[in-house]
Image: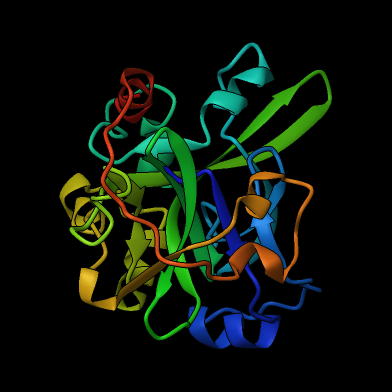
Length: 240
């Protein structure tokens, strides 16, 4: 899963990293949560240029009767997104990049949920694989997105069995191209990020409060033993 993430790089750095002109004021965000607006990079159908946009995190399929469904669709399981009604159209034609500098995961350790911060070893920003959609009813229009997840790499597995999909820079064009609807071409991006380039460390439960959005969310604490088991209700969430 991916329930919180951070985006602290400035627009200039992101423009270089993502190959996109980002002329948007970007205050550093240390604790981005579901239902908030997040920066995405996308290419709209029938257009050729990449564009930045702010979409609500929690995908509302265009066919949904009740927009509250978005609260349950903050993540999309990569293995089944091509067949799930909520995600299959977006996976074919409305993929996006969601810039991040890191994300958080909670491990169940000794009966307590311990947060960890996960980032690249290089500390560079990266792009999560996302899907987007537009919901319209009675003059109301909401654009939303979700983050794809895959099996965790071996570094993360002691913490959690899932991690967000990370799209490699040389694959940005293929991932964003709306006319690229070949499942095989897209599926090669839906794999765990290499453990050799991944860094993680425990942080305090300060990050648990969504109102906290400053650098204290990322401050490392003393080492925590990571032996854990997954509760039954947690495993159910992984299988959505």
